[in-house]
Length: 335
Ligand SMILES: Nc1ncnc2c1ncn2[C@@H]1O[C@H](COP(=O)(O)OP(=O)(O)OP(=O)(O)O)[C@@H](O)[C@H]1O
Ligand SMILES: [Mg+2]
Image (cartoon, rainbow, N blue to C red; front, side, top):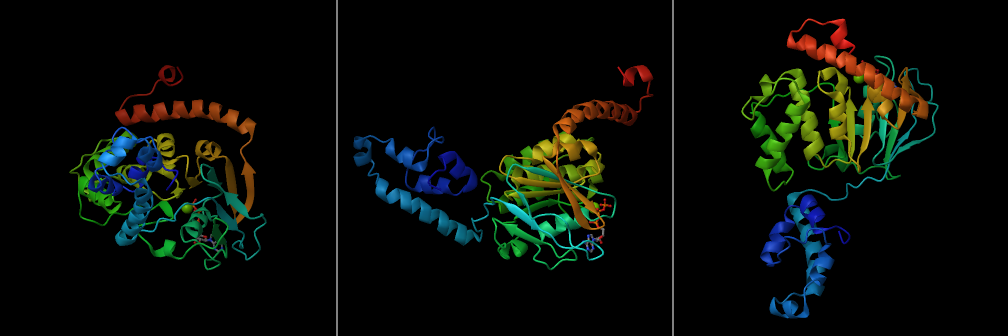
């Protein structure tokens, strides 16, 4: 907390605003400073006038944050420095042949392999923080340690934000209500504003626009997927993002990935799409339920990605024109 700027504090713990108000600390304009630096900017005169007690404020804010987190029932220790996968067995019970695989924040790992080979299973192992208690017998370490079991059960402070292949909404809510409810549960100060931002991002990914008062149950598959992606990207504080096949939703998959990836997150993505697979730093190859190889994307592949991207552009534009009801011409498509 000591090294966080006031802006970061407000973002992570929106309730500190109340603390500043209660103590009549005008932090506006000083958001780029740490709390300590902010306290130190006061002149000796101001310190006396306003009875600012630097010695008191610093530990007090720390305690305040701790108590509030406790009160709200959210723990604060979900910083993840590393995720490690320890080998288990494939579908025949043969040991997987890879060394412990460690992934660090800001890295993207893709997972490739034939249909039914076990890609979703690997994501599920991570989501469940498996400890040899899944069909694969794999174990997952977080920060080189066995993860706290609270991550399995806590809805508030999830280790993992998962975008699964099945996204079934059961609640009878409108889009706006759903988003605001979610934002509130995340202790966001401005749920309405946040919900508008998510809706905008979602519509940016989806084809036909939907509105705040569209019932969640009447969204199409692609639209609800777009909504979940935007919601996860903007609202989720989970340090690990698991993505199961964003390409099949008929949404802008590249934009979706860009939205989801952020500097401090670990991203694992199962995909059948060569473009997405090559956008990753490394890729896990799954065969017969086991991790068969872990490959680093080569320079040649990265430059190949640019070529593939051009081809993809052609396909996308054909898709767009077909969707719009146009007739395709060779000249227009390959221009
Ligand atoms: N190591 C393993 N041991 C036992 N069962 C496994 C193992 N790996 C995967 N399975 C099982 O194999 C089945 C298919 O796996 P999964 O759904 O993960 O495939 P997938 O690669 O995601 O396929 P798709 O591309 O169709 O999504 C599941 O029932 C899964 O639990
Ligand atoms: Mg799958």
